[in-house]
Image 1: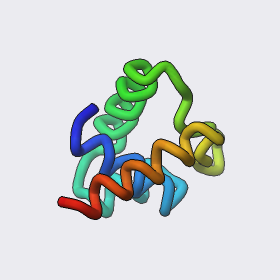
Image 2: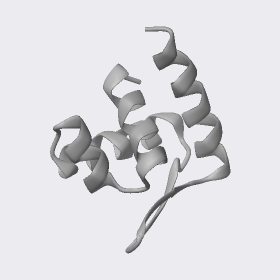
Image 3: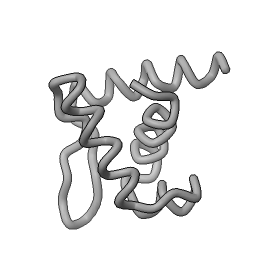
Image 4: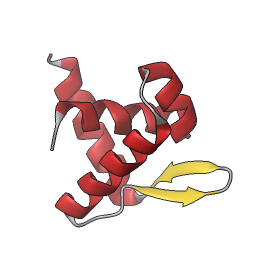
Length: 75
């Protein structure tokens, strides 16, 4: 798990979109998508449910995002 991934999942959680998070963080959407996919693979869980209308955190994803907020608030 990398610091950037924590930023990505918190922004996607807030904004509901990889594109919106990418614009805010000045990163390409494919880079964020790949990073999130790698994190999900590393953790063995699905953090977001993906759809044409955006991304919604799964139950486990909500817990991960909450922890990510805690970590980011301490930096």
